[in-house]
Length: 117
Image (cartoon, rainbow, N blue to C red):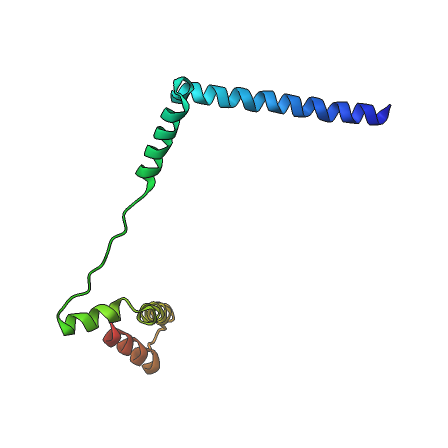
C-alpha cells in the first residue's frame, strides 16, 4: 500500500510538471508569434536569429614597413603584455609605499619606474 502511494505521488507530480511546462511553452509560442507558423517558417526565424548572433572576425593586416612590423609584433606579443602589467603593478606598489621622510631607495625606484614609462 505504501509503495502504491509513493508511486502514485511521483506519477501525479510528473503529470503536473508536464502540464505546467506544456502550458508555458504554448504561451511562449503565442506571445512570440511562432504559434501560428508552420515548421518551415519557424526554421527560417531561428536561422535569422542565429545569423544576427554571428559576428564576423576582424582580420588585422600587419604593416609592410619593417620598423612598423617589428613594433606590431612586439605590441601583439604575450610576454610584452605581461611585462607591461607587471611594470604597472610594481609602479602602483612602490607609489603606495611612499614614506615620510622619503628614503633614497624608494626615490630611486620611483625614478626608475618613471623612466620605464
